Image 1: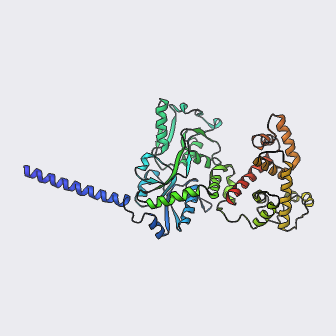
Image 2: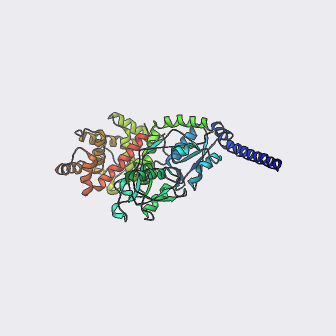
Image 3: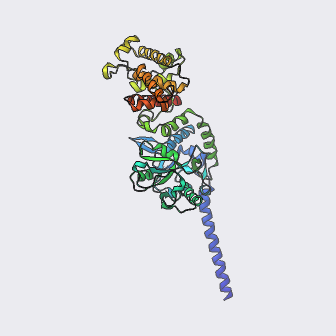
Length: 451
């Protein structure tokens, strides 16, 4: 009997050993082996595979054009190492770490927050973005539940959150800090942050939490949602990579560190996060921009702007807004050409509808310089530029009158933002204020793209 028990025990130990060895070997294949996974293999295969979610901040397609903040960043990285980028859309983020470790892709790109739990399974690049978590709720006029102004008011409120997200951990900590329960509806990873925004907007749920940059990127689309209540310090957002990819991590870390200092990174942040109320301009005009030439008239812009020691981006933004670089186009009321001068203005500056593009640009830069001089009492350069755009659109007198009205209301007549602009928006000058906002958006975008 004892012999039988001893033999059985030995067999059981052997089986357990073999099983553990097999599991260890299988795990080792994914975690410790560099086969078909590290930088050298990616370069040899001439392809880097990205695991992404379908979202504005990660990856999406608009009218057949591939885009997304992380996608455009990684496309530049892939170009720098001489490989193509392939995207695999992940429908359920609950399994994305496992999919990465099972060699389904090389990089995770889904606005992934660095957390201690995730670092047990995968590694991360250095962060490319830092952003706080914010509460998403409907604006007071649209909101059936209580409008939350303080995190303490979340006690006993129902909030819907992805269970395996950093948001869930934050709300659990917040529950402890409040000292009262929060009704947490735990969701699985098939609901992306953008889908949760949609659910709040459609009143399917009352509250959720997302990273602030995701909320800002979708502000134009979800204009009736509020995202101004911060619930955390700034979180680190990075790309996820396997622990067996030290060379890839090293390469990406160096590249991200340098890319964050580049005009292209500034442009991408501006494109996706700083001007979403102007997203119709961003998507149509700057979708694939990243350097090179703005138009065939760049040399002329630079030549004429240099004469007045001014930025050529100013005239570039105006021409793009007025005519989209079409030299002989005719507009309303007889406006013509690249600058869309009215006949009287054209005559004053020595051009007409048949004048060459070079003559039009020369006259346009002369007028811009004259408008710039009109506002020499404005000390702040960026504010002065906005007055120049307003004057180009409406003439000097309407803007001067708006200054007087602003002063009478106790506002600063030398500041456009929140002062003269406010007066115009309350009167018939709303069109002028919108024009300034759009052209200034173009101007800033051109500066970030084209030195």
